Image (cartoon, helix red, strand yellow):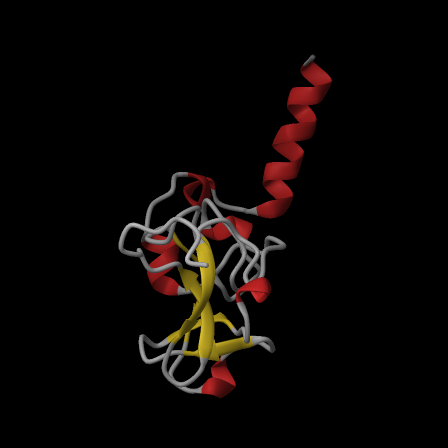
Length: 127
């Protein structure tokens, strides 16, 4: 049991050098440093440490979402779009491009991105 605990500590050390990244504070989110995790733009996350370096975890989105702050399209990784909110979101053409529960392909400026599905009036399928 002690060996397993030691292994978990070793993994935490590799994924993030600072214990602050596991507290869920917004400090790292505002700096845009990311944590060197494996999640890419549009993926779910709990903290910045879950996202690739240079990305942040937006906990305002359901289930969290790795994003990157941007001023131009050139700031965004391949497969993502710099929106009018100045955030890189995963690009899409259809809802199938956005497999996360509660997300769909929505019209954004300047192009479609995966974002929270808009609420509908009484329908459950949107048929």
